[in-house]
Image (cartoon, rainbow, N blue to C red; front, top):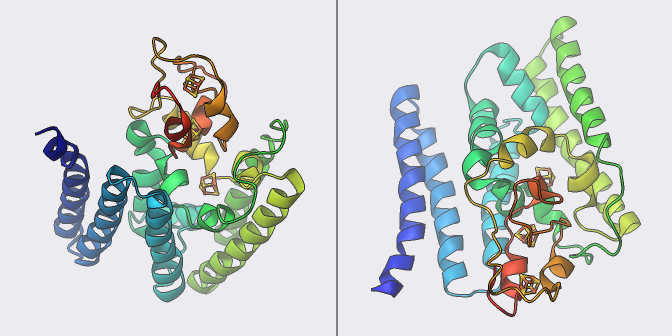
Length: 275
Ligand code: SF4
Ligand code: SF4
Ligand code: SF4
């Protein structure tokens, strides 16, 4: 009975995505949404299933399935700019499509439920960065988080300027902005990882999307909690955390709390099953 119950989680997740898929398909009269959210739901559910089966690379499988789909199929083939610039673009045109839906679900309202699950399981930038050799940071976090506000403002100014200048063929510009933007993100992300000896340095200091992700993740329903009655304070959890979170503190104000990407490395390495 207990075994059957744990399979309810991937089944439930699939149902949630399917409900979104059908609702958007019918309200937007566009069958693409049925395909899109079914694909993502199947990928996420498969990942949870693999995790239940204790497959070591379960998270990486979801990351590649969703990340490559969004980067290659949605971005390169369908020409949809799903970067933050694409979000501003669709927002300014007043269209609730593509990037605006994506941002609403994955990055603005979704984090109220699943925190920064996007960063751990779906982001195509981190999908590549996680292949680099510094899975846990070599040193303490630097005080460089302010850079994210500069990149956030730059993305907004860039798209605003296109609209103010009434640039022609803006769709084509946005497509090239997606290609060039991704190339810049990868180059900066890989360079930062080697400089700081930390695969997630880009996420910690440069990524503009965190400006959206962090406030809602503060209230996240799903979060790693520590059972103090089991914890022996060995510190193994903190050593393996890629995001420098103090997961042994259960308060919402815990150190780097809104940085947690729900990778569960801490829980997997806790010798007392306290997380
Ligand atoms: S912080 Fe930015 S680059 Fe890093 S995983 Fe999240 S969205 Fe992707
Ligand atoms: S690894 Fe487990 S037992 Fe050790 S400090 Fe972390 S939560 Fe406590
Ligand atoms: S190791 Fe634990 S606290 Fe750190 S990011 Fe992963 S799930 Fe969050």
